[in-house]
Image (cartoon, rainbow, N blue to C red; front, top):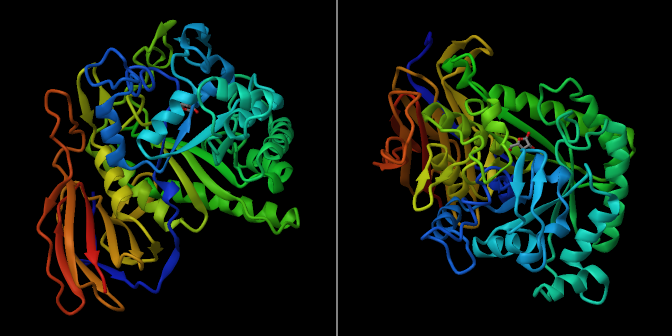
Length: 505
Ligand code: AHR
């Protein structure tokens, strides 16, 4: 890695340079009926940690700490073959089915009502999805009636007969999942999907005009139909939807850590293209309505991707895509979240995929729980980033990457919360070898003090936590520097993520 220019980096912070209010939904998660995400993850009556409902208390505690603002459910590819009626009503009458997406057995012992109970227990907003694969627009409308209508008609009464009299008022609804992907059950081209989604949206909204709808966008920037799929689907549905989704899974397949650690460039390019598409369609449709972006599946995922990771062999709760996360993965997650703040004017929802066991920050055994490396950056952003995102200026030495050319060694974002008079700065040092002295320079009023500094760092980018050694990579609190003349100095270790919390006012 070639390091050039001055060895000290500067970060200029001005609380007047607001990008946008930060949508709390940027700190959301995703739980699919897949592998051991629901069964043995969230719901595990056989675990010593289960409560009387079979919900894992230790998992709920960790998820509360992550402070997921919304949880997307029930899929994922699973969604496109799911019959939601299978998962409600008396448990002993629910069918066992073959889940074709993951070649697993779905027992349906956990369904919509159990999910709603779970969301309430961890204080998160449910984000439900309607099946646009095998499901009809009528099924989608019936599910909205079941969840959101007052009693007095068939599906609302069915809900009441299941023990849930009050409507849930579910606010966020996805119109299918990755419908651009040929792997999807019931895959459609953009035009057919757009027409189906538009009609489903109409019926769903007629049941409840207050709901927010998310249209399926490209399932990756690598899709051959990207970004044309997005334009076509958006043109058909513009006035019917509130958000347009994107998905992306990052990987270090070439074992090129320098490029992997510069992936924010790719995340930003993906968002920029879709933001351009949104602007184009809004203008073309002569609309006054706005549609925002929902990055409702994102994470590192490339190691656990062989066929035995993806197909369950018709087992219940098979071990599927249980990716083990290392330090470099955590640094990619941290800069992904930096990008969320930097693009917070157009990106309003982001769901870490997934929450438990399946490509997740949390791994479980029947009686144990492990916090993976990626747990810590997510938790720190979720806890500390609030108010508005700030447009910080960064002057940092550059290094060269094979994929993105010269990139700055630092990746930075910041927030300022006027109401609570707190501010946070998030910094990734991408250097694999060198500590970097950094000056934080406040351009307007400096904070009263830096109240805490949390850091995740290590010398080996491949270092990971395990049940045997759970604390190899975790966030630790380090000494907070003093502020002198509106400036504070830190030395950031190589391969590190640092979250700085300051008290303003
Ligand atoms: O999150 C795992 C899978 O990845 C989801 O089911 C699908 O939407 C995506 O391809």
